[in-house]
Amino acid sequence: MRPNLNFDVQDSGVSFFLENRFRHSLTGPKMHSLKSSVGKQQARFAPTAWEVRCLAVQAGKQAQCTLRRAIVELRTRQTLLGISLSGDRKRLELLLPHGLDLRQPTEVLVDGKVLGKASYITSRSHGLFARMPVQSAHLKRMAAGKQLAVRARVLNGKPLVIRTRLEGFASALAKLR
Image (cartoon, rainbow, N blue to C red):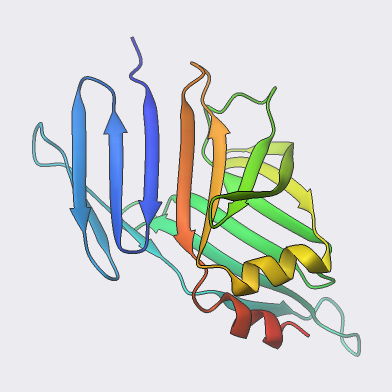
């Protein structure tokens, strides 16, 4: 029997639950360690900073830029959550873990209030991709907000919530212009 998963990730602390088998919790300002209650396994999660990355597709053409952030397990480099805002500011794309119920859209929340719903678009070996259309009002809420959360359901119907701070988002958004 596969255990039920529920992640709750925040910049000031991480909790990782595997129902009836493990319960880990540790807080820290930059890096998060999760120690297994069985054995000596460790998983360390670290959020990257909000950053703008640009890629020159063709010489002489304007570079394509995106605003990104990820929460990554340091040992395996596996992404727990990836967030990307397109350079034209019209799409928010999410990279999510496998095992989610694809029949229900993923909700994106800012400070506990629903910002919108992201629809799943494809699956790759490293996770599920979802996309949400974005309007300027959404970006204003994110720039003024303190916390972004992504809420989905795993296949057994239990909620999966991944939270991260929006600190630094507004300044990175200004660089995307």
